Image 1 (cartoon, rainbow, N blue to C red):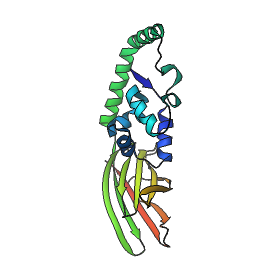
Image 2: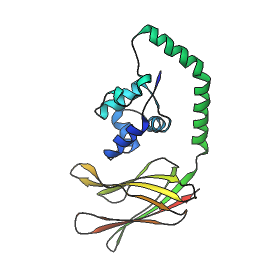
Image 3: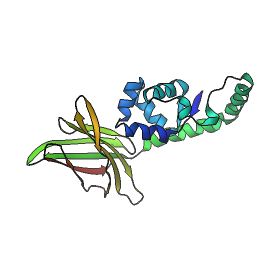
Image 4: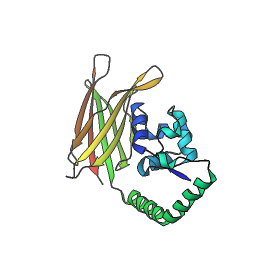
Length: 207
């Protein structure tokens, strides 16, 4: 039976650790699409919820909504199963609707240029569905995670996590949120820690 969980809490805890959806999926032993579905719909199997709770050092009860926690009483289980049976058609309709949204979701191309000083470090172009995270290695020591969404006025909102390699792990050094018109570059400037500055230009294009 799927649990109804606090997807926003999972998303916040993951981003506080500067983890991408792909990294959470890897350490939890799940598929990336499974993590995306859990964060988007707020439903997870008990096994998936246990795996995510373990890597976040939590109990399932810390993010499962109270009335959705598994119980041992056979009488309560019977009541829950009856409620689920009555609501099954609505759940199926909701899942089909969400799947349809995923299929028809807008795609956004992100053109990324990273420069440090006078040298051109990286040029990259990636495509993401609206609301889906993408991760790009922009230099040997820096990577970024971008989550693009389309604002009501047609602008593109970019939630960016900038990470720098420190020892053997990447640490978060910035989390700017930018909004720019479709096809126009958004600019980020960040100190690299060696007296230089890393400049990022991210140009979103709605496909």
